[in-house]
Image (cartoon, rainbow, N blue to C red):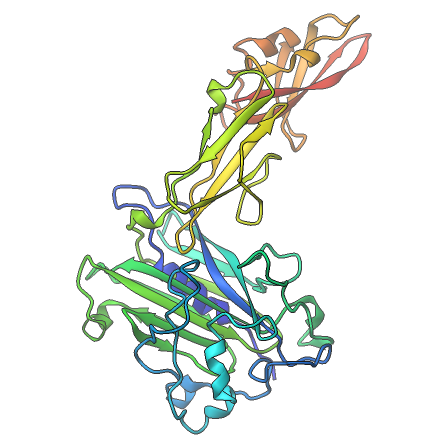
Length: 448
């Protein structure tokens, strides 16, 4: 039988539903990045059989929803083990019904191990990690969407990170063989995920979220379970309308409420997820402030140059890049001033655990006026006259100048892209060809 690991769908849906973000006076961000906590378990496997967890990759096929049963207590347990506040909400956990109804109990045997699913245990039992999830906003509909047709967040090579730097790595890829056309050795199966956020209830606006997934999925709003998809089963879909749940959940217009999401991926062979929601993001306190650079590029002097990064959000961490790539929580962690010795594009993003990541800061540092480095401006024996071609970092021609002299003039600032707009800030490359003299070595152009 094919088992689809759709659990992340429910997770992502709940995540989107619970996001707290910019104030109502601000434009909703096009992308939202959230961190979820993942715990890797050593599922039943043929590769390394010592200390396997019998609740992961078992063969039972059971669906509480299809049986019309519940698997967890309606009220969330708020007395679970915490982690010192490093991941807000870690003390909030689901609790199995005792005893579980017949027909579903076998899927959770032995039940005394269920509390391990959403709490940090010894490394032989589970290993916690943080994973970034990115949701993209459809400007036409206003809906945020997360979609991944191969959602295996702790696969080797994926950008997850240890919850504690000193912890061991994941259990890794333990499965072998082909199932439903999937090479099982390519993925790390057997994990749980949780996320805890706040959202504003907006009465009468038809706030909904939808999901499709398996295996176990539980969603709590205001501490009450509204989604119970416990068990190991093929994909199941669902939709929740907050207005219809107003009385049961005790919701009042304009107030903030907690949303807790839990799921477990417990069987091979696939994992896909698509989620949409129209919940609005209005709690500015849950968005990290973008980093700032001191000095900013427009106030920088010649190299070498020390640049410090900061954010107004307390307890936030800053991650940065200096190679032009987009920063995220897997990139370099800022700890001390950056010593720049040559023109550099610095990009940075701020994270605070349980908050939405900041927008990305970009500062393009160059020496002297906009244009070429002094060492690239001339070459003995070659006149300044002659056309200059300008290329972006991908090698695409973006403009031409009459001579290298123009590179040191306002002509560089007046260059336009193919849509008529100014060239984006960044690093460009030039090459000049003087008839009869052959090619002149290329140089570098910096446009702030």
